[in-house]
Image (cartoon, rainbow, N blue to C red; front, side, top):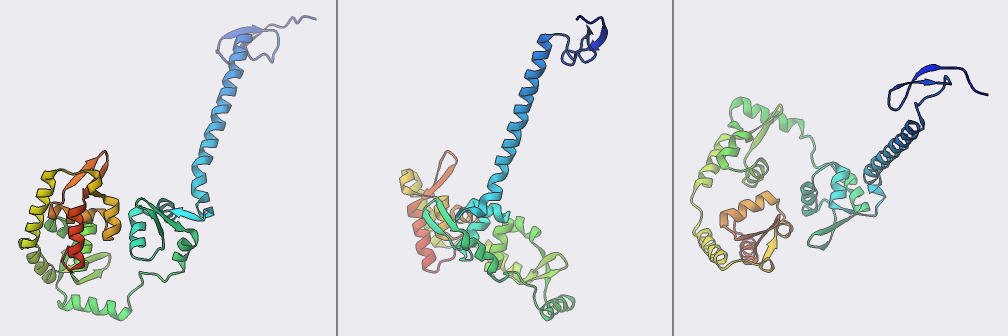
Length: 277
């Protein structure tokens, strides 16, 4: 039985108007019908794939603590910190680890969790100590004035390197509000020492390193920067400062930096003998 109905409809795929014999007709023809459903299936696949990708992106974050053995990167993600901060914790002995090779350090989950059983390293000072320092500041006994940002261009060091340098030289400091101020008198003395010409020993070392550089370097005759970080127990940027002062020969291969074994071993021998780095 044929239908005598003739209604105007708009195709849901191409958007063209057409005359339909039913009020429920959605497409102007079989071709638009097929294309619409092919597009629908395609969009559903894309949506399903995006959901799977999002799930994969979240899996490493949620499954890290299920692993018995963690990498340095895993621990950094769990603590929302940097890898260099984790290496600092390892070098200081606060976090136990096992070094399987030069570039493979692993941490047991139990050792990572033991971090949270240790006492806090940063604790509030006693009230009397804080009151004494504020009193010293008021009476001028503690000659406060320099901020760390003011000293960075003077000493030509990064913030972290300068903090380490000032701490090593026992420069007195006081915290007033949110600002940390350093003793002018102590910093001035340190700066005079900082400006003094380097010792003849360093001059001789630089000459020896220049001779090594003229001979040419091979990767086999070098340590990687990562190896030096582990040997010295210092951050990468601090090591670069030590090596630059002594003009340690270096070799760059792709994105990796290598430094002369002979020059580094000479610095290590001096460190064991009590020489200042």
